[in-house]
Length: 397
Image 1 (cartoon, rainbow, N blue to C red):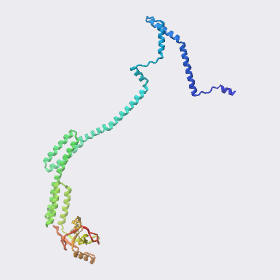
Image 2: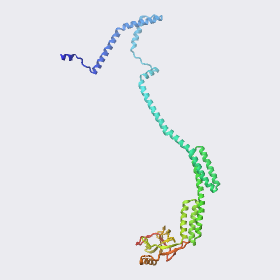
Image 3: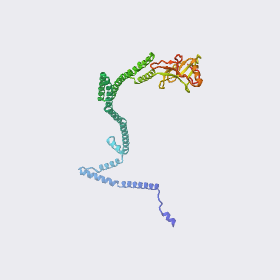
Image 4: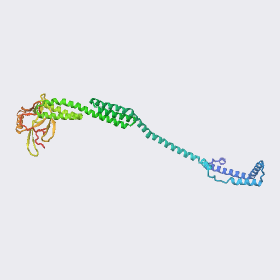
């Protein structure tokens, strides 16, 4: 009994079976409509002829049934005939209408591309062209309206101050003329020309400053050198100080402060040495020999030197410019050697070895007002400013 019920139960249809059944049903319905149309075609034609006859009778015309019959036949013949639409606005309109979806998509894409391109171009033009130009115009306005006028005022005051102190009317006229040129350039908004004009005014001021410095330094040099030169007692010292004073004056006339300072320092140093009495003391301390002997490596000749230093009455050791006869170089040193004979060298060596103390340690003296040294032993005046370490003999030329 159960098997019979299972056979009578309708099985569930798959999706493909359902679609196939629907397609068969649609085909049957279309065939039924065609048969119904063929069956009623005669009635439809008679009804159409009747309507046409009444339409013509309403207009006062009489048309035979045969003519109306042929018209209906002709209408049926053309009903299912496809006629190509001719070229023209109608074709274009309906073609666009049919393809409107694609046209909408293409138009939207094109509009998006154009919008993005225009936005990018506008942003780039604004960032790379408009903003830099506006910034440059802003900086130029600041330069023209604030910076350059302020620089002009300070530079004119700087240069005019020197011109007034020097009483140089020609320089004042140059400064005023250049100031007017700068103001004209500012009116024309020509910053470069205005800055060139300011540089010209500053150059005039620098020239006047050098002149003023020269006048001041010359007067200072005269005050510094005149008294020292007048106190010298020998020609060599006077010539040395006069030469140094001439170097100071030349630097002063050029307005060269650095060169003037160096020359003035040398003059003060030499003048201090010349005007101060000194004793030439033989050095006698650890690490510095009282005397040295040198051998020429080429000739084998032997020379002897006493190592000395210049000591003032206050005990100050004075540095001197000493030229080394062996090397030809001049150095400023406090300890240096004066050439002596072998006998003097051996006498000093014996004095040192007798009790370990150099009893006679005064090599000479330099009176005030002169550069001449009165030596207590014979010497040819040859000097050295460096020598080998103690215990070493020999020296290259």
